[in-house]
Image (cartoon, rainbow, N blue to C red; front, side, top):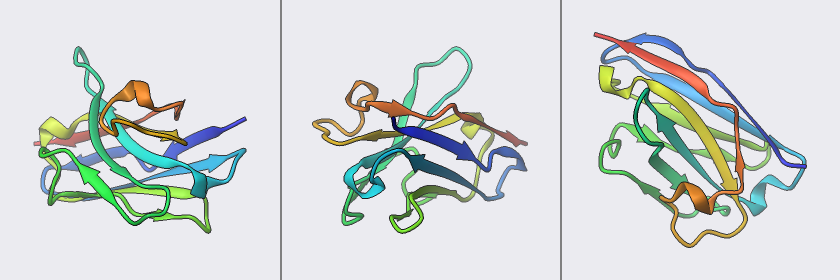
Length: 124
């Protein structure tokens, strides 16, 4: 059974940085395309960025291009979300997600496995 566990959330001031981690267990990490989403109160789950299982390709939403990066370490079964120049509107619960096959990397329904989420709060 695949399990995803996020960590690294917290409170940070605007302009600061934070790195989230997501560790996958139960299956071979390198067989999954991985992604990060977030959900703010009263809003739909929002796609942020995805990375191919090989690590060779990434795709990011315009809202985070140039600020967020999605490195992965297949040897450690871990996905990261490096967030720089954070803004108050980045406040949300952040989720990692995994899928073996993906047609639309931005669609939550394309992902089979989800972490429990980690809260990120950016103060102004």
